Length: 277
Image 1 (cartoon, rainbow, N blue to C red):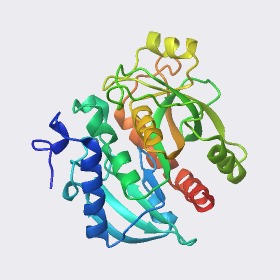
Image 2: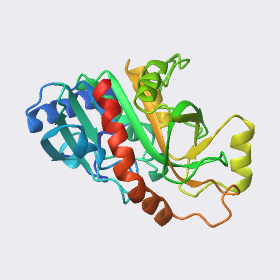
Image 3: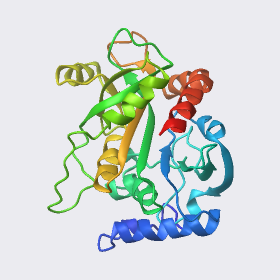
């Protein structure tokens, strides 16, 4: 068992992949499921998807699994679920996300992804709630992530580890999602460090360098997923227009409300997409 005060990933001499393997063993023991095929991280607004994917055969507190700790953010459930889809695939649903702004470092941020890979999952689906830069987008709109710009100044890769990120957000999986919903748009996600929302000038910088979505998660996780050999699909729920694009002040309550309103529709979409992966 781990918590925020005593986490094996905080030991710089520890091997994060060994801890991920131990976490996968914990999940197998606690869920009774030896291996998973797909992993799904549920960001703000995406929570109901877990109920629509298939039959939940086990739900466990993440704090009972090596290296995990209680989520710091309202809107994240703090559990791991094993779901059996109608097609016979096993989905590991991750409701325990560690954000970079919590100050624990990249190892803790990407531990759930490395654990998912250690359970056998070859597909990683990452979702988040984020701000939109395009004026044509509206709160409650799901958007596919086509690429990212990592503005955190950090990486989950350690040492001379060189990973090709050319097709990080799989075109094959994005095409599969668009076959379910041809109206899906896509954009480049910019991960900022947070926890403060971006300033209007920072949003304009993101736009100038090719960004369309701004948020505080996902990019570091996607890098770790690619390192682990996983195929990545990313979804952002546009919860608000970004600072300077939207004329009213930003708030976390606004993010939660937009997520709650959109949750039934986007969760159904996500469940349909997972069924064809």
